[in-house]
Length: 401
Length: 96
Image 1 (tube, rainbow over the protein chains, first blue to last red):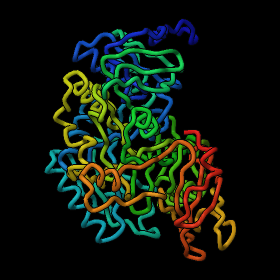
Image 2: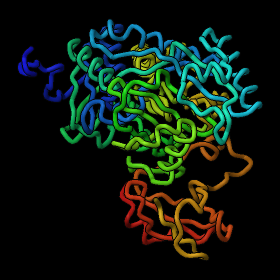
Image 3: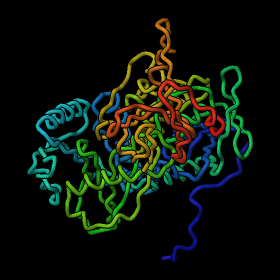
Image 4: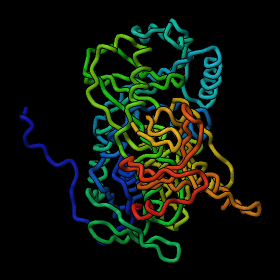
């Protein structure tokens, strides 16, 4: 025991250089993972990751830590299952305990029709080679003994992806940051991008609050600010930014051993290793960059949770916050090329970007290194809105849209 | 909680209203190419700053109207009728 003295720095804090091979804007999970895989798998050594705040301080530090791959469309399932598989080995890959706990994600059905839809969803998932299992109300009750099956919208059953679960979001950011830094990646915090240098339709650098940087290639992954950065680069994106709230209760003894979600009553809840209930629901209905969330939706989230598990009514809320989610029309992310040459991006993750961090980094690194989309993301490009080949993924948030 | 001033009913809580999204979107002509058409259908201004948007007073008079609202502070700078141009006062505030 060292009384928490003598901890070495986990990553370097270098000065910003004038020139890089690749500059990544946004030191969240996606940006750090992209830098890590670029250095590890594609031997790109001269990389900078810039962030206007601190690393992992945006949506990476605001989400509810759920990881799952129970998606309907084959493209989505292939991508998100790749991500879940990477999560399964991430602790060893980064030599950093991300505390992955595959406790399952249980999605509830509240009517006969809901259950029918769920059978179809679960079958599609299984055809996608991802695990999914329909549960009876009795099986739901066995898994979550505190549940009130006979609530306002009675529980008719549900389905579970047992490989899904939660992990520690800060550890994912810190793990990728430490591993990337040790491979020579410069992580520059408190360095805000203020504009791009674009010549003849080709990006050559960025202006920042710490000076101008030249780069061969630039990528941005700035959840909650994708439209803002795209506008700086001179193009428009099909994104609406909205506040998604989350909240935690005071800590209690272990009582909830899975992640419980319901699209009908718009609620999801899990219990952290510290014992707090972590829960949330739908997004506030209007455009916002305010990162705080409104009271009406907070009340809806709490009411839905208490209807389902009345025993939680005795608990106090400890914290409530919001992240800004970039919602696309088909709720599928936007990844790959932009209309500007040598400028790439990864955004539009809506309410579910956390689970995509390892695969997002892996596929964006490939895309940047090879200047062509990774096979797993070739349907996620900005061009789909012109071609009409949308990936209308109702399962993206796991709750109804 | 937003407090929105309906031009007909006065100031009410946000839960009485439905959000209608961005205003002042112009439908292109029938000769529009795919790029222009998809821009019209899907792309959004989505500003970090003043947003010109329309709301429906669903649990009130049932009428639509426009507002200019800051997406960072949620401050409402102007309320104006459907079909009216963007109010000029707000253009000076918009910094984004």
